Image (cartoon, rainbow, N blue to C red):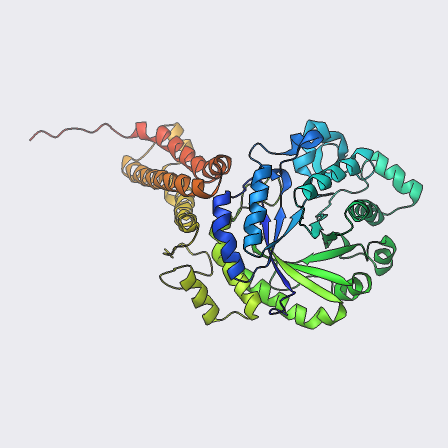
Length: 475
């Protein structure tokens, strides 16, 4: 299956709050194609240039219409089909956070999920679909998201509807999804609709069949672990309802919400598990169309950034090669390492002892992340060390009760850490600015470096005055 030319190897680009510059995409699209990708799943969230009634949704730094045209040109030049993705139910924070759309929330204080009963909900989703498809005239497929809808049937209007129509929360979910898909099918009959599968994984077969979406949508089954925790009967149930399915793995953004260095071997093992699963279960379906290698930018709209695209590019290269060859071995490891110009084999796990040397688009960011890994561990060791907590304890500092010999040594270490972090801050500002826009650069620096510098400065400001003034010894 890995060598089937009709099988899609999709790279997922999650743009939440950190869209790469077009100049960078022009560098990496050819690499993605070279490594075996033939499709992009682009999740726009608020990075799409919404207009009219939806203008509020678009972030200040969203792509322009001209940017989208250029992205599609670059993709076409590299034989990469584009599948647009917009959320239409859950993960709707980027819309519901705005005052204009607050009334569409399922739970008034929470901007996570759309209320499927409010008449404005489906209208808003339809307008979003229209605008996205209008700027993707070549699109043959469209992904409606629909994962992790944590709040269904909570508001009084939904509860009233559920009682009136005798609906379960699962049936409410399917009613909204069916309305979204029906709109696309009615107005864009040439488009195949995709959605995430997790909201129906434990749904009974009878409810799945009654949902009426079996021939309307192709689910994308996602799983990011190296050992499968999916329901054991999932393939039997899905195969009785959905003739065609998709799969989804990950190359970044799946091992921790604040991870910034990718554990490559973890994702390799996930892909090997998927390859084995496909071989075992593919006969149950008319077609397993392809696998999307997801690369999450944030866990949700309000989360900080996790691994950024340039840092995870070596992982993407290896994962695509694993899918292409059907295995992972020293030859795959070596060939990718050589292509990305690593002086030695690229590290497969985050390791503070490793100082890699390499050259590929965005490699300065990759190297900077490894340097930050080392510095962050040094910082954490310092902040939580027995020495600092013993001889530079806040209680004693406040009472000016200190041993200068210990204090001087501890302050010297804080100064060294500050200097190292400031030097790295300058480097990261330079290299991140090549790939990303200023808002993303400012966020990453503030979250990861400036907060540490502020804490170290506070320590110095409190403790430094407690050292005795230098004295001059007479000769």
